[in-house]
Amino acid sequence: MQILVLGAGSWGTALALTLTDNGNEVLLWSNESEHVQEMLTTGQNALFLPNKFPASIKPIADFTESAKQVKDIIVVVPSHGFRGTLEMLAPHISTTARVCWATKGLENNTGLLLHQVAEQTLGKDRALAVLSGPSFAAEVAKGLPTAVTIAATDEQYAKDLVDLFHNNYFRPYTSTDIVGVQLGGTVKNIMAIASGIVDGLQFGANSRAALITRGLAEMVRFGVALGGKKETFMGLAGMGDLVLTCTDKLSRNYRFGLALAKGSNVEQAQTDIGQVVEGVRAAREVNRVAKERNIDMPIVEQVNNVLQGTCTPTEAVKLLLSRQPKAE
Image 1 (tube, rainbow, N blue to C red):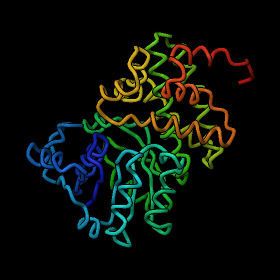
Image 2: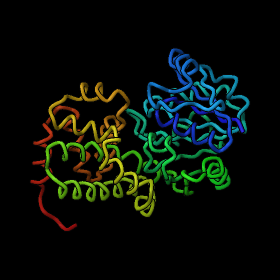
Image 3: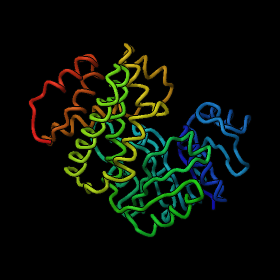
């Protein structure tokens, strides 16, 4: 089966490799023609994930013709480019094509979940799905055991996606909670920044454990308020992804927090990492939505304060610890 993957970053490339391992042909799109030419010349994505491409991966710079022919499209672009990518796709996508995304975050300035953006741009009758969970691209590309969650608006579509991705190292589980799965992947990036700050300040394992636990409480509070199911946040797309990104330097959001704690400013930390740090935009959007809905999210609030420059990482931790004691 030929599958169109939109987004040739590390995660898009890792998913493309997984799909080809399962016997599919993948058209891997990048919006930068120079990047596409480099991949065609070198036979790998040296910029983001330097694994040798099989012949079944074809980098492309234009998806207009491909979108008319494929049945399945996987979108793996940063959240700030999600709507723009779907708007480019909309005039060319076939009426029967199905769309899954592995993008994490809310839309900038609107606070919309990505399935709401997809419904606005591609129509409410189209089969939509999201793939999320604890999954570092580099480890997936190496074939290391990984489990994720796929939530879809259509039960058969979720099962079909499992068939496309499932192999001896990549195991997807299905869910009907498309809201909860998206919000778990959004909030965990903010908590990973906080965890990086805690470790960068050398506050120790006790502090990190407390941060992860209270971060999960905020994730559940926010997710349920927006329509997610509580049990979703106890699974791969919630706690699983939270633990992963808060404890390992493969997480760019965690490394970003480490850099802030050691004195880098936001711009320098992002430049040094060299890839999109989704937690930066997510912190602003989640904090704004939480305040509008009167949802108590003190960790998110303080991470956003650090990112906006209204307090230092050390001051943010002191503000959290000085909060009025209460029942857990």
